[in-house]
Image 1 (tube, rainbow, N blue to C red):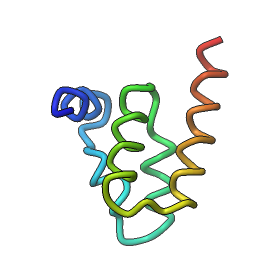
Image 2 (image 1 turned 60 degrees about the vertical axis):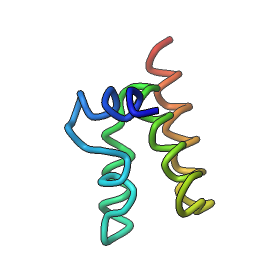
Image 3 (image 1 turned 45 degrees about the vertical axis):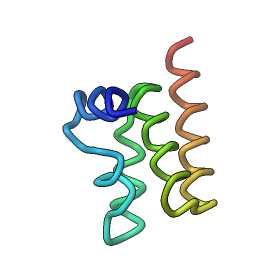
Length: 73
Protein backbone atom coordinates (compact mmCIF):
# COMPACT_ATOMS: atom_id res chain seq x y z
CA UNK A 1 0.00 0.00 0.00
CA UNK A 2 2.79 2.44 0.73
CA UNK A 3 3.98 2.10 -2.88
CA UNK A 4 0.52 3.13 -4.09
CA UNK A 5 0.59 6.16 -1.83
CA UNK A 6 4.06 7.13 -3.00
CA UNK A 7 3.02 6.77 -6.63
CA UNK A 8 -0.13 8.79 -6.02
CA UNK A 9 1.86 11.87 -5.06
CA UNK A 10 4.10 12.03 -8.12
CA UNK A 11 1.80 14.14 -10.29
CA UNK A 12 0.88 16.88 -7.80
CA UNK A 13 2.75 16.08 -4.60
CA UNK A 14 -0.54 15.72 -2.71
CA UNK A 15 -1.28 12.68 -0.59
CA UNK A 16 -4.78 11.21 -0.41
CA UNK A 17 -5.05 12.68 3.09
CA UNK A 18 -4.23 16.16 1.80
CA UNK A 19 -6.75 15.83 -1.01
CA UNK A 20 -9.61 14.47 1.11
CA UNK A 21 -9.12 16.09 4.51
CA UNK A 22 -9.19 19.70 3.35
CA UNK A 23 -11.10 22.16 5.56
CA UNK A 24 -13.80 22.94 2.96
CA UNK A 25 -15.73 20.91 0.42
CA UNK A 26 -14.51 23.24 -2.33
CA UNK A 27 -10.92 22.24 -1.60
CA UNK A 28 -11.86 18.55 -1.48
CA UNK A 29 -13.58 18.89 -4.85
CA UNK A 30 -10.50 20.66 -6.23
CA UNK A 31 -8.27 17.89 -4.87
CA UNK A 32 -10.41 15.28 -6.61
CA UNK A 33 -10.54 17.28 -9.85
CA UNK A 34 -6.74 17.31 -10.00
CA UNK A 35 -6.52 13.52 -10.02
CA UNK A 36 -5.33 12.53 -13.48
CA UNK A 37 -4.48 8.84 -13.13
CA UNK A 38 -6.09 5.71 -11.80
CA UNK A 39 -3.28 4.95 -9.33
CA UNK A 40 -3.90 8.24 -7.52
CA UNK A 41 -7.63 7.69 -7.64
CA UNK A 42 -7.33 4.18 -6.19
CA UNK A 43 -5.13 5.50 -3.38
CA UNK A 44 -7.75 8.13 -2.57
CA UNK A 45 -10.58 5.58 -2.58
CA UNK A 46 -8.55 3.31 -0.29
CA UNK A 47 -7.83 6.21 2.04
CA UNK A 48 -11.49 7.25 2.18
CA UNK A 49 -12.65 3.67 2.76
CA UNK A 50 -10.14 3.22 5.58
CA UNK A 51 -11.03 6.49 7.28
CA UNK A 52 -14.20 8.54 6.88
CA UNK A 53 -16.22 6.47 4.38
CA UNK A 54 -18.16 9.56 3.27
CA UNK A 55 -20.65 8.59 0.59
CA UNK A 56 -20.52 11.97 -1.14
CA UNK A 57 -16.73 11.80 -1.47
CA UNK A 58 -16.81 8.20 -2.70
CA UNK A 59 -19.42 9.13 -5.31
CA UNK A 60 -17.29 12.08 -6.45
CA UNK A 61 -14.28 9.75 -6.74
CA UNK A 62 -16.38 7.30 -8.76
CA UNK A 63 -17.44 10.13 -11.08
CA UNK A 64 -13.80 11.20 -11.49
CA UNK A 65 -12.86 7.59 -12.34
CA UNK A 66 -15.44 7.61 -15.13
CA UNK A 67 -14.00 10.88 -16.43
CA UNK A 68 -10.47 9.46 -16.42
CA UNK A 69 -11.59 6.33 -18.25
CA UNK A 70 -13.33 8.47 -20.89
CA UNK A 71 -10.20 10.61 -21.32
CA UNK A 72 -8.10 7.46 -21.85
CA UNK A 73 -10.31 6.23 -24.72
